[in-house]
Image 1: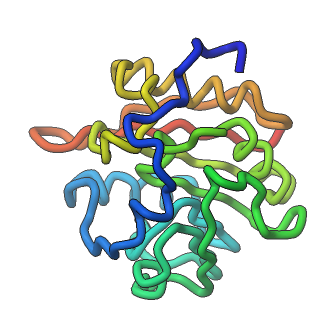
Image 2: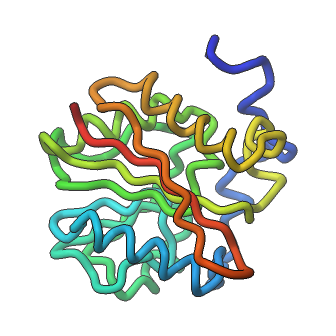
Image 3: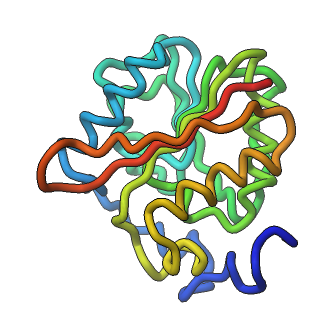
Length: 202
């Protein structure tokens, strides 16, 4: 991908993601204040309809569940433990960036603390554009915590501000999105930072 240097999307651990994510990890990956900040953003954007939680797990970061929430992730046990999910799909986006849904299937798509693991992000963002309905939003939130062996190397080498620009560039390179909104949604005080980059279908 010419907009990024060679090796940007490599990982320290290039073994199959299915092996790494096979054990169920029923843990939270950001602290409670950061989780609340994600929920507040979703409320502010009124993400309440038919929603896809991309690269999800046993917790979706909503204050209350949308009307219909589809959670796509890597670990079946974690997905089945998600109390907000209306349906779950086990799928490895790094192996196959295609989303197993019809065109225009969702009002909005969210991705919490996972965008940094994508090795083919623009292909995935193009697929998100395809499954969104007109006017739909794709909302990516992230912090500075991660499984460092599975995050792309370009992310590990970037500052928080540069990471926001990386995700904004994914939107710019994908089809059909308006310019991305970048927000620092970090809770006041000491704790995990929280950043949001999101865009609406143009």
